[in-house]
Length: 410
Image 1 (cartoon, rainbow, N blue to C red):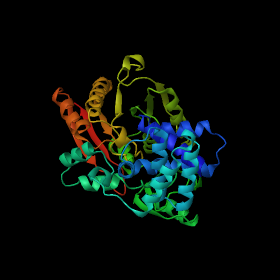
Image 2: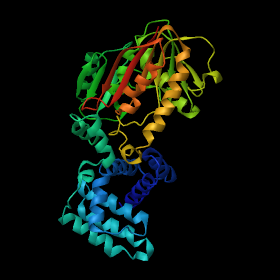
Image 3: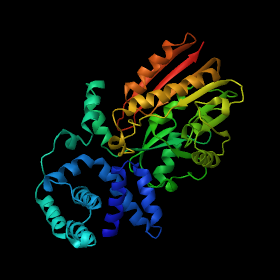
Image 4: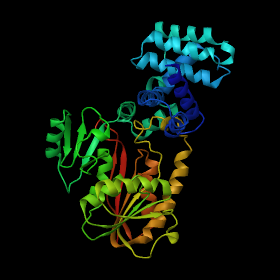
């Protein structure tokens, strides 16, 4: 177990240094190709679990050890062990013993006794928590949510701290929710129907175990994310641009709905490979382009689009439960920077839209700076744009947080 603790602690240390959890886990797993599937799964589970309870765990550590330890890795070994003691099924004696073994390999073993004492004290006393530690969100984030959503902020926090649902999107060309539910039940799985093409599994499973997954019958996509394609008013023969398309979930969903001349654009060529994989699995076709959506002169062929999905880069504050490190990596100043990038992008895309065409502005953010305020600013500078509808989806037990605004060019 101490090897799992060590690699988990190294990943957590990298997140504390500014890397995303996805990057940190990939780095540790990539450097240790000999790990078993069970060990890899354990390291990932610990990484995500620690990020969900980060403030609480750090608060506990500071009350047990008031001064920061001189070895950052040792700090994070203790955080990992505290998480295992409080939230995993690992045997308590094994967690403590393996952490002590790991400590004995660091700094000539000077901290063995400290690690042993801290973890044994942690088993007998749960320390008091301030609001940040109790809610496991930065205090500035909590304050911002209170201001933006005085009636709903606590339910947003609760959703952020929960495990995300596993939601399926049925390929409407091949099946529907009711038929697929019967296939799931025959395979021993249970699900709740959300709409004609969406179901939510009651217990997550590996995607490869889903009936018909390899054949393109079903995809995994949050129910909130599925709303994007539905809102675009798609029809056969339309020319469509999916800006910032990777990894391709919305791209494929649009092509399942209608026969489109669709271009999937992304600035990252490697991420476009994910789009291609999804298209191939679902037996769909789109033109893939590498390019910056804010600089269409480098990739646009001059023909206007009937529909544009502007799924812009954002703070991802609506998908925190899927990426629990986001809340610790974000800073209050990030929202202004992101808002400027979003404005540049939609300003560049608007001239590409045909008269009578529609652009869907979309984020997975819940903050007004990136959503309603952006829409207000965009409309104020144009007499050829009208918002047909907008909606802020807050995270619930059924879907993540998203914002959508459908804008028509007059």
